Image (cartoon, rainbow, N blue to C red; front, side, top):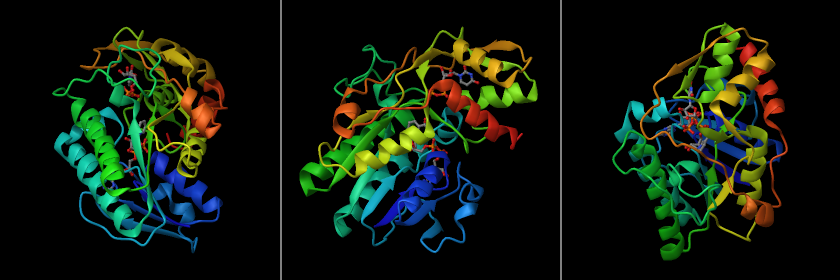
Length: 308
Ligand code: NAD
Ligand code: UDP
């Protein structure tokens, strides 16, 4: 197949391009390089089945493709809050452009949604049927509400125009090719530990997240895209749940770092807890994550040792 990946130069997008090429497809990646890098795809430059195009998805685009994976959007809170209006435009106009293209060329189209649609959840763990608890006017809203509206657009195009959609809700995912200065917790802690600088825990560190290693997630993407049991939304993530204090301790142990832990103020609207209910993914996709936190952290630490 010929497959379009928006946000292809980013962390998840570049791993997805690798996987799709390894499966024998042709891949066109488009990216505006806001948080993505050409270096994430440099190893593919000589591959005749791969093409990288500089383009912003808020502007119209046309490609003759069989499938579209829409991943373009900054994912780290400091990056998506840097220009919140641009973040909303990317989510909403980007979704409309992907859906319009999918409608025109009859491509299947995949939306990278997020566990952020559940906000600061009152139901734990979060099943897909939970509608969430989201602040519509806060600092995280540009991302959370942008992604929620993108989901609405996907389901409206599906109902109104029979566009063939797939929607995944991704829970915190980590691995090689995250930016060292990305601001997300796993990359922050690893880089801080490797540099011997203090690990910055926001708040008291009792808030929880569930961390999925990138290879497990990409396997889930491909399974969701290529089955017909469900259009989604489907949660993909690792149900192992850790406090930020526990994560810091794992990173310190695995890096053998002597860094201290310091506490910084908790950002506003920071969700208190998050863990996916992956019953649907297990049933419909026969998918569940295989890589435990310490193994994934070891691989990620090995990558960051080459970067810092
Ligand atoms: P990332 O920031 O590494 O990748 C995003 C990519 O999109 C970058 O290459 C960036 O340059 C590109 N981009 C941003 N705005 C664009 C625009 N307007 N036009 C074209 N390209 C644009 O983040 P990631 O972790 O790889 O996330 C990929 C997708 O998965 C995002 O949609 C994100 O919301 C979603 N997601 C990721 C996670 C996670 O834990 N990694 C969790 C939930 C959802
Ligand atoms: N966090 C932290 N220290 C950091 C970066 C983040 O304690 O250096 C916390 C953050 O407040 C949140 C959790 O780690 O509670 C996960 O943050 P991240 O930005 O990775 O993802 P998200 O909040 O979007 O789930």
